[in-house]
Length: 216
Image 1 (cartoon, rainbow, N blue to C red):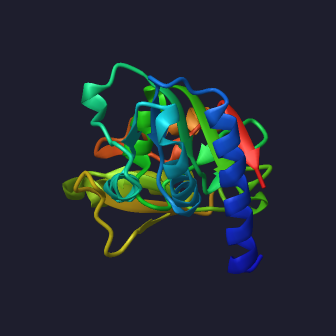
Image 2: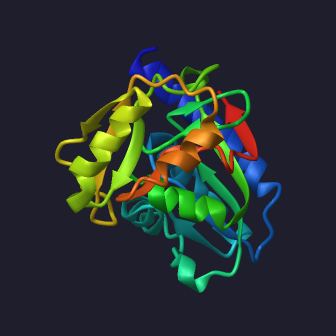
C-alpha cells in the first residue's frame, strides 16, 4: 500500500472515530489521546469539537503539543480522576483486539493512559490487521543501564533483540525492538516480558486489549 492511499485510509478512520467518540462523550468528560500518524489525523479533526468534552490527556509530549496547537486543553494524568475514552492507533492488531504498539516509542505512557480509561478505541487502516502478532517488531522500553542484560534475556524468547538507534523515550529510556516473533499467547508473553529486570514495559496490549477497533 502506498503512502498516499494509507494516509487517505488513516484520515477516513480518524473521521469515523470522531463520529463514534463524540456520540459517546459528555461535556465534562476527559478524552485520552494517543501518539502516531493516525492519532495525529484524529487530533487535526478534534479542534472543531472542543465544546463537547472538558479536556484531554496525551500519551506523549508530541501529541500534547499538537493538541495545544489546536487550542485544546491538555491535563496531566495526575490531575484527572477518570478518562472516559482513549483513542490511539496500533502497529498491529489481531481479531481479539490485542495489539502491538510502540512504533513511535510512546508505549509506556500509552499503556498508562489506556489503563486509566473506561474505553479504549483503537483506530487503524487495514494494513495493521493480522491473524498472528509479531511480524511488526515488538518494542520494549528499557532502563538504559539494563539494556545489555535485557537483550540477553530477550534472546531466550527466540526473537532477535535490536536496540533502536538514536531513540530516547519521553521517560529518558531506550527502546529494544524484538524481531522474528510469532505471538500465539499475547497476554502470557506480555506478562513474562514485564518480569525481566530492567524492562519498564513492552508494546503488547493484550492483558487489556482495545475495547473497540475501528478500521478503514
